[in-house]
Length: 173
Image 1 (cartoon, rainbow, N blue to C red):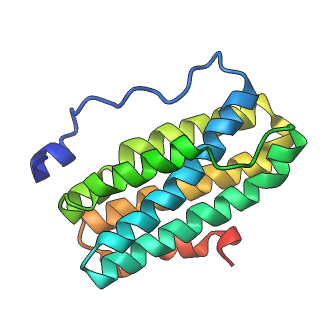
Image 2 (image 1 turned 60 degrees about the vertical axis):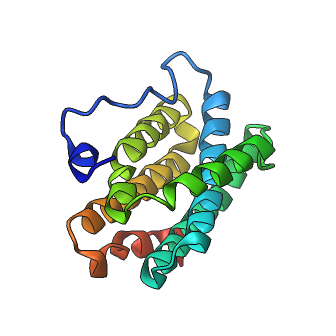
Image 3 (image 1 turned 180 degrees about the vertical axis):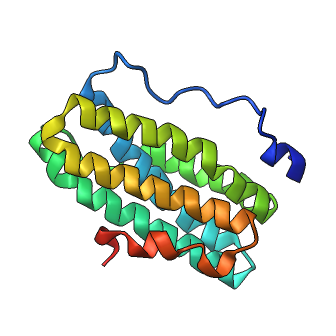
């Protein structure tokens, strides 16, 4: 993928990760496994990077994904849902990391925007369907916004400030 392709405003949107008809329990499971995927993906990418600054940033994002996943546990348990990582999700994250570590950094971080938009929309939907868990849904949306901001700042060459919103998330402390 060229730099131009990664930033093309008319690039097709990825297929939706959820439908409006999906039950909230299914969305919770997708959300939780999405955090599993992010945690493993960012950790594996970090392990493959030669650039120590980029590797440290990936480790920070992996930690954010883990802490976000942990912040979901109570809501998952209240819904009677499993908090076990899906082995297939872990394998997919590991496989995806192999390909992502090989592409240019700017292309990798530019790919965050469409993915975070998809997850944010799903998290908003969870809050709509399950108002009693809106605080958790809002935390999920906030962490996607922080991840999107990270990617935007990295693409813009503002790597010194790119983790500010991630590190400012309440569950990162």
